[in-house]
Image (cartoon, rainbow, N blue to C red; front, side, top):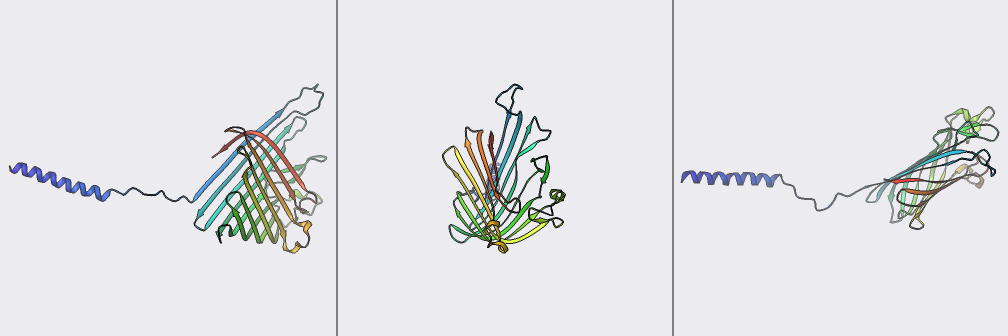
Length: 297
């Protein structure tokens, strides 16, 4: 009898001890998922084309091989009335013609932008931003012979601005930098050549030109139809010292059209228009068409 009582007491003790331990160590299941503050989007494309003509081809033509790559990356942090956005647009392309002993570029762009904003209401925000525009590799002019005219940070343009921002969903975004500081940079003096003393607005030997003015930046992203998307960006800057001379306003327009053929294959068309009298008195224009692979992650 005493033995049975002892066994019952022992079992009761174990139930109490281990049951209480299990209750003390168990955690309640979360009722809601943690709030997500960061969103990331990346889009990478690779395209190329090749042309070959026999020696007796009567329509004319030059054998060539070309390829280009584009990476567009964006990160957005949003918490209550505060948000921060970071974006990068990188483009590079090369072309080799059989009649040339050198390789030519078809496109070359480094664009980085960081923006911090605080909501005033649903559409308007105060913001502070920093952006950079430059290129990856040396650039040449091919008028008579190959002449070296540009390279990484020669020129390069840094712009810091504070002001007001208007935003409509993820489609339209406009920033008016009422106080903007722009640094035009030339770190490679070889772009001046033998006779030039000023290149890209920078005096030879100084490397940096500082300007204070106003910046306007507008971006539009929209699916025109289900398979066709449009991305456009405008940047404008004017120095307060030259605001009475509209001809010296700096303008840059970047447009990228993407047509989705299937899950992996895309047709792309890009256009860049630049008006900057410190670079050239005339409007600069670039257009590239491509067909190739596209991957979003």
